[in-house]
Image 1 (cartoon, helix red, strand yellow):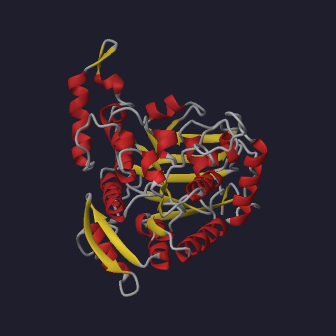
Image 2 (tube, one colour):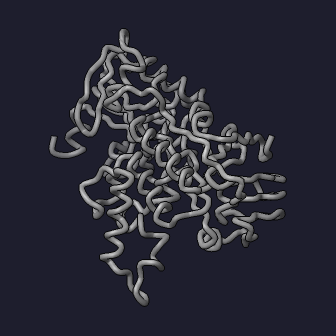
Image 3 (cartoon, helix red, strand yellow):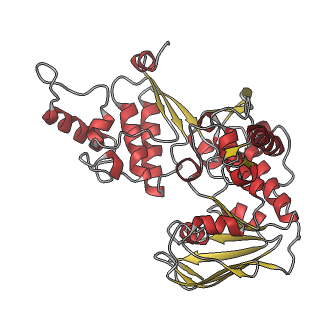
Length: 406
């Protein structure tokens, strides 16, 4: 198979973790891209395209979830995932690989996807399902193939295997405990938030001490990420005060927040944190360029030394620091985001869903980084939707609902 076109002609379909959607054309054109129906000559047959997409949506149970006329740029993350799935199912599919397909789907959409996968299996289609979520793996799989560091660590029969067996193969050792939490918090208040109100949150009072890990828990839409963005200066604050290490911050200015000592690793690392087509070196040095410059020029030697130091410290798996960030795995991309802020040495580090979409080995390494930062006296505010993670990492848990702390 010398090209994607040859693989597709052979019946192989890939549904990537990050949906690749053409922004300014409709759902119908996105789904049938590369195989659009034509009239005599080369003109697009819109009537036939409309019939095909309506039949596709109805057949796979997505007709109530998505309109065929929506533009790609207007789709929600869940709808983008559905478009990728529909695209893969067009034509003569014989093997379909799903890469983390549920990462942006609601519970109802996940159930529809699982029903679809079982239906595909019943039709004799081979399914490869890539996931870090144990419940999904044991619910769907006949066999479980475990990869570690680019090699096949083992294959297990799903009917007789246990979760601990899978985790052992993934990490290469037994896990007596995932978390290495110690009580290292001091009495010094680093972050003091009083009565903060934005478009998304109301009357927020919050403190985080040096060496303390405070978790923000709550359902999606509770206002946790919006609060993080407001603290980092990315959303306007209508009222209230944010004080860092005894000094009141000017709100609504990311530069002022960074200069004061706040770092944010946002929820969507690809869209909000990383320059995907730039190197690990470029991404790591981004917030410390003034420290690395001579006059108006960056000292490349100092930049390389800094990037190499943090790449080694966080064990980023890469051929070199000149490797493009887009080519790294999710866990290693997240480590590059952390390396950036470690280089800055923040007083407060906000981590929004720091382990979403990464494997358990990388999770353990990130938990260790969080524990090490707390030991160094950094104040940590961690947002997570995984309850075991919240309970394992945090000294205190602050629960949010509908934009308020409850």
